[in-house]
Image 1 (spheres, rainbow, N blue to C red):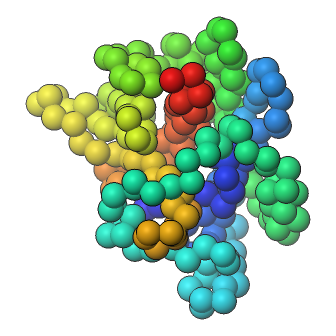
Image 2 (cartoon, rainbow, N blue to C red):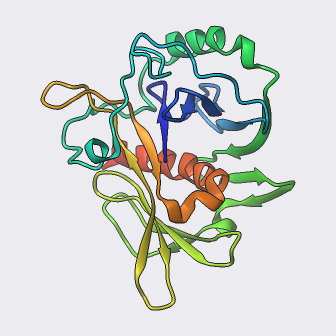
Length: 230
């Protein structure tokens, strides 16, 4: 499955499925220090009909989503603008207008309070803990160390910040790594077909989509920060 981002910034965007249905919303006020990302999830049972589309496929313009074979291709062409440093005001204003009809259909899922010099705080499932406790640092990479956490199934999962995009794998007992999720950057469509950014979640990860998205919001933020200092 894919969760497509409707806006430039992963910290201020709706995440929609292939039918254009909003499943998650991430809202992060634009503060210089100690930003707080609030993650909301569609209330179960409140899924509405797909949004109208000029393509007839339930996807709101201007996005024309592509199939998995296209998305899994090479991602060499993308906008190249880190989403922490774009002007989000117009996007956020448009999103507020678009989501008025859905404001009562979402429930609070999690919060991440980003700290610049100390461990960030994760609030999820009625618990609060430092990200340095939730994640264990492992290995070394160009944009920083990988982050390992324990899933609801008791297995270990590892987010790699990657050279190009972050990827999530499951660490299996036989020392293999099973792909769980991968981020795809936005593609402008100059050399290849245009597509929005998306978080691809493979079948092995569909039992914990909430947790994958929450962890992604944190991982992509620290990766964006690292890109600016690299």
